[in-house]
Image (cartoon, rainbow, N blue to C red; front, side):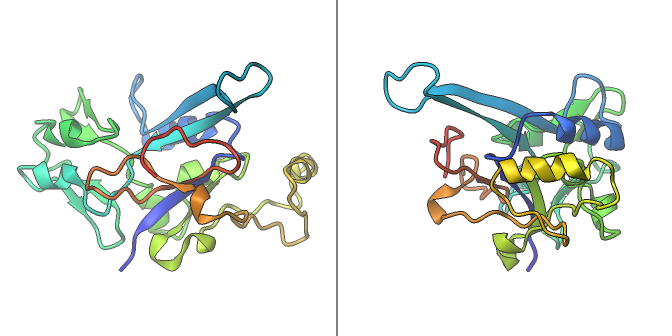
Amino acid sequence: MTQYAILTDLNKCVGCLACSISCKVINNVPVGSYWNKVLRVGPNPRVEGGQWPDVYTYFLTVQCQHCENPECVAVCPTGASHKLEDGTVQIDKSKCIGCQFCAMACPYNVRYLNEEERVVEKCTLCEQKVAQGELPQCVAQCGGRARFFGDAEKGLESFEAPACDLSDPSYEAQAAARVTLGESVGESCEYPVKPFTDAEVHRLPDVGNKPSFVYILRKEKWQGGGE
């Protein structure tokens, strides 16, 4: 079994929107629509009644969760919405009749009707890139190296972020940022998932669909619902 998914390290995400914008560009997403949204959570007090500066904020990326048991697939009357062997949920536009049952069934509101084509669209997890052994665009373009891609069946520790280019003039700045985050900087230039505990692993609310995407949040209170 395979279940491709994305892990987002919320302690590293700076809310730059690079994932959201690069997704729109490579997938030609219409103006006003998004396959990947970035929500700001907070500022929230760290303790009840707390005041500034004892507050925290994090950025939550929301897109199709490529669920294990997707309700959107269950309600699709034509089979346009379907799940592949790699665990991703895709839409066959040739079968889509634009009824939007799937959009109404999705608990994360991440599907929309393309008014021009009259078909429903959403994140495909960049299947065209993954099939070529590349990372999804939102992962590849994450400047903070906060997004990781992999097979959930192989464990979260196996997820990968794009390695940096040591010859890139911006590497020095990237390395300085990593030191600030408490990471070591070696010549391998790899970006493994930083250590986490089970209590620091979260998902969006599960209503029986079993979302596959994972969020890591350390030291702060999770406000995204679910677990």
